[in-house]
Image (cartoon, rainbow, N blue to C red):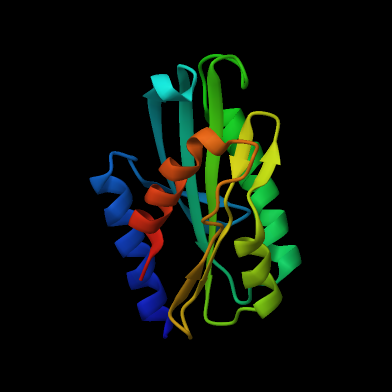
Length: 164
């Protein structure tokens, strides 16, 4: 995929986020453009909690485990800082999709993203690795013990937003 098609993919994600009420916009992180979308959902079946879902997507020259790991930490920090409302854990949770897109992906980075959900207290991340060369999107689609109540919701949103 060319740079043009990588940008077309991000435009597609932006459109899907907009259609799902995530109010996508572009920000600059360390001089690089990132697509940010956010929505909040409340469900009684989630023990009457409000889940704030953040999606942050960017392109990088190459995706390796350290690159996706660092980006995941940055996105979780951003999400906790910007969610507003009650403190995390007080009837409110934060979930995020840190999304990196590249035409050069280390298979270990793809495996890392698909392996498990990354958790902090009342905060969950499902890193997404998009390999445009092989037209493959990898993210964890399982139901972990911690955060299990939100798993189906996150799988549905991830499939809706990122699948090619």
